Amino acid sequence: EVRVVYVGLGQAYFVGSQGQAGIGRPAATGWIWKTDDAIAPHVQEVVEMLQSKAKPKFVALPVDLR
Image 1 (cartoon, one colour):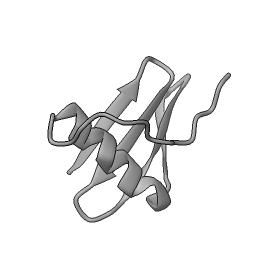
Image 2 (cartoon, rainbow, N blue to C red; image 1 turned 90 degrees about the vertical axis):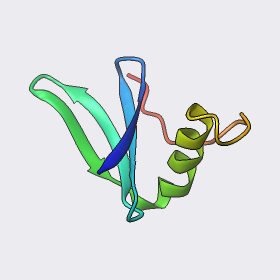
Image 3 (spheres, one colour; image 1 turned 180 degrees about the vertical axis):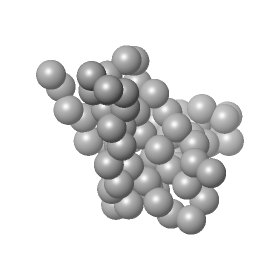
Image 4 (cartoon, rainbow, N blue to C red; image 1 turned 135 degrees about the vertical axis):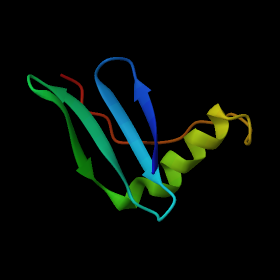
């Protein structure tokens, strides 16, 4: 089970309870998901903010602008 945070229609992040994390981007055939466990703590922070379990703050995450 993972939590997913979509940023508009162009990017998403996921984090799981076992420390796995990654980035999703849309493609012609659907979303493509790539694992990047290094961002797990940051994505978890975002999820906690969205659930009102943490105070809002800036969180640095990788972004691919096209």
